[in-house]
Amino acid sequence: VDAISSIEFNDLSSSYVSVDWDNASQTGMYDFEYSSDGGLTWTIIENHQGSSINLFDLSSYTTYDIIITSVSFGCESEPFTSSFTTLHPCITPTNIELSATSSDVTISWDAVLAASSYQLVYYLVETGWQSVSVTDTYYTLSHGGNGGYGYFYLRSNCGENTFSPYSDFYSIE
Figure 1 (cartoon, one colour):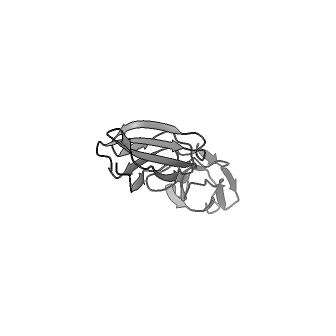
Figure 2 (figure 1 turned 180 degrees about the vertical axis):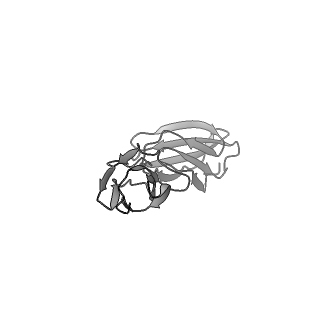
Figure 3 (figure 1 turned 90 degrees about the vertical axis):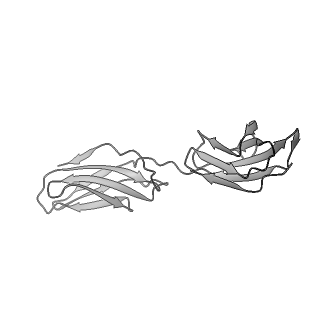
């Protein structure tokens, strides 16, 4: 029985992966095993039909070892081994704080490991509603000494089409 020789991990996130491999089995049947604890315990899926599988409810930022064996006519191939690591979760920034001076207002927050940038949506009397992408963990806006009030909310941008929910609404006067 021919063994698998290539594998792809698609749509990898903090809790999901789609695993695709070359269709080496003459019957299209495989035994698929995965472990998140270095091989101490295994989840075993026997006689899986097809050369792909979707794994849900995975732990974030965890390395998973996998073993795939082709099964045909009561025989098994040599096992194919590989691994993948799930991503950090894309969470809403925390510890959001606002501070103001007579001429500006600064919003700051704690870094999110998975974030490549942050989307800040704000309203100032001088500007109306605005949205800006920020790579730092703070942003300072000038209100020209006119005072007034401001509204703010924030989310993490963690890659192409991957975002956290927006934060609660923050305001300052």
